[in-house]
Image (tube, rainbow, N blue to C red; front, side):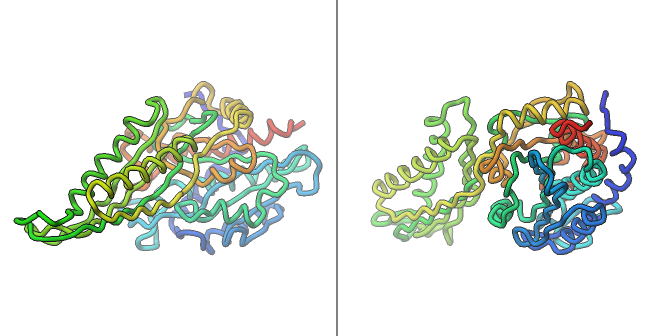
Length: 391
């Protein structure tokens, strides 16, 4: 495999791996990440990078060459963990019960720190400025929006985000123009019917039958209303109702998620769900409440930013820069990319000697091939050099 890790990154490879393991051992949830944020800000400050803390609650922004003329490029990593009990047996296992880095954000932070250290040493020959954005609250807390509201993108021309990806092997980099991650929304439906005895259904409105009808009808939204080449998902993940075998239930709760790569498909799903709920309500005589909550929008890569990132990545991984293994997952990097040109990309990190799908993200035994950290740091470094035409 012809991987060309940058020599400067190779020299600090042990540091990058150690940073990742330290962060992995001390995971924190949501928007309030005091230990992780202090670790990051202390490192950036020690390298002479101007640091702003408490951006978006506990986000950290490091700025290099703030007053230098030229473009400003931002590099982003997320820092938060997940509410999962770690079951893997590694020396750097989580020290916090019920909390672990099960998605790779510890590695994202370490990769960006590695790049920041080396980039800071080249400040004199950079024809522009760099912002290093370390974000809290990616896992459902809208951390990117909080940081944007606090001004982290002020003056920034482009932004790039990185994600370790256990669905691709070490040495591959996945990136594409256009939609790369989906919108992720949540819905809750409360069905109020009329209960009764299971032996005498007349006069009742069986909320379980109504719920079953809705589950089936929702599947036609994708199968019969979406262009087959445009990906979308409607999933009912929770169906709760009933009290006993011989009682017709008077209420049911459905909870689920919808996913779409395009905003117009997302809006179509919402409209069709409302139409189906309204029609089902009339058909069965039930009272149905639909609560629809929009989550992160689709993550859409800017074509120009994608081309720049791919060119830099290919200098590190050669022909292994390719389209990613796509999923219907979502990312709040989408908010950054909606504000300014941006590109989000994946670095293959499937653990050595294991199949890419055997250690999925958000599982209790999640781990990575730590060589991927050096690939990510090298790409960030290469991208900044290519963007600023280092002499």
